[in-house]
Each structure stands twice: as structure tokens, then as C-alpha cells.
Length: 129
Image 1 (cartoon, rainbow, N blue to C red):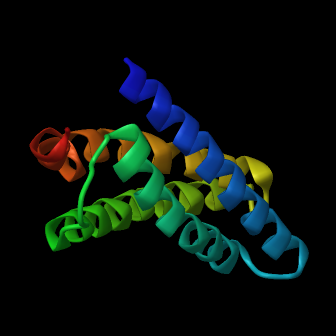
Image 2: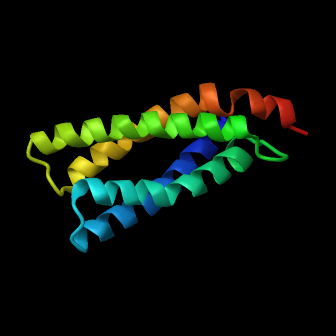
Image 3: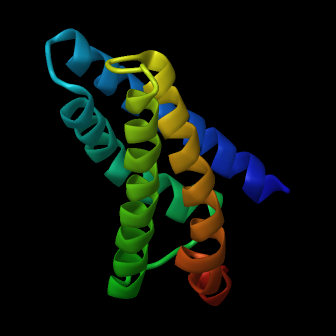
């Protein structure tokens, strides 16, 4: 349960950081897709570090296999995000906090499930003190 709470807190921090970047970029004239990509790029390193160390308690050197799995999960989750964003745009939510918010929720749900079951599942048990 503590792991889920920590994941949620990391997710909230990442969502807040990503949202600030996204909405600032939109305000500065970037379109939906560019703003969205920039926001998630900023949160990528923060997410890996906080989830690896704090949420899942992985210690020791970062393994290439972790990075590859994390990258795959981020990529898949981002595709889910873009799919939802495109659907929202088609339904009248262009350059909209509602469209961006729905896309972020979809990303977060997908990212949690895959991180828990695929990215840090085995490494967390292998390297815990």
C-alpha cells in the first residue's frame, strides 16, 4: 500500500511539473502536440529517479534493462496519451486543459500498471537491502 501511495505522490509531482510546462508552452504559442511532448520530456528523468529509488526502493547502479523497460513503458503510455488527446481534439477540446487533462490521466493509469508489473517488478526485489 505504501508503494501505491508513493507512486501516487511521484505521479502528482510529475503531473504538476508536466502540466506547468504544457500550459506554459501553450500560452507561449506552442500547439497541443509540441506542448505535450515538451511537458512529458521534462518529467521523464524526474519520474525514473523518483520511482526507481523512492517508490520501488531500487538501490545500486542503474541497469540498462531498467532503462529499456522504462523507455518502452513511457513510449506505450505516451501513445495512449496521444490517442486520448487526438480523440479529445476531435470532440472540440483543442488547446484545452480538459483535453490535456484527459490525456494525462490516461497516461498515468497506463504508466502505473506497466511500471508496477514490468519495469521495476523484478529489480525491486533483487536489490532491496
